[in-house]
Length: 226
Image (cartoon, rainbow, N blue to C red; front, side):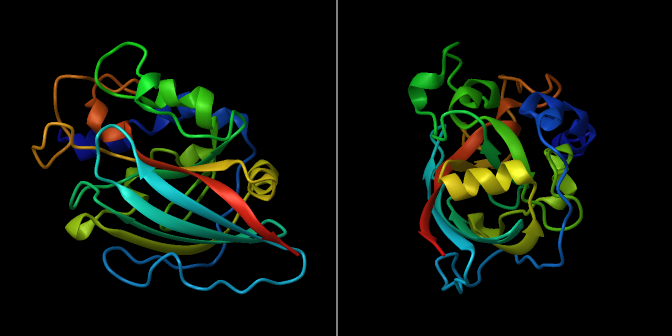
């Protein structure tokens, strides 16, 4: 069984990411594009009763990942746009909104066991539980936290994502408060071009740490409220 198949089989490990801590969200009609395309910095219309959030994604775990995201929230409907670069090419990348902790991203100092990775668990005190899974289709609740077949891959190391979804109340509150955290997972620490290596994932020991370790992180700051 290859690594990507085992990632899909490990979906039950999403509970360790906080899957049980939030009410499920229902996916709303939307769309997604992988690879090159319009940037996440594209203009988003702001309407009365709306919040416009912005996140600058910075690298974690020695990845070259970086990017920008906008979130236009009205009620519980969120229009999410993300452009991310420097990712593991042609590999799936789980992406989530997290909330319920400090509303910040960890640094390398969070690697408390000195294994060379800031793991999901080590980052949890900073960004908290999953409140939204940024899948390309279907369910967007925490239960889809490791639904790897429904997360984007990164042709040429780039993801361009756009989807309109309905988020749960916890996610909506965090976005409005300016302390939701966007995390993109999947790194290639050893430069092999694939998820492998001797360090195992803290979510499932059958997986390499590279498959689940955070690659990029950014707090969603609320820029405008109307």
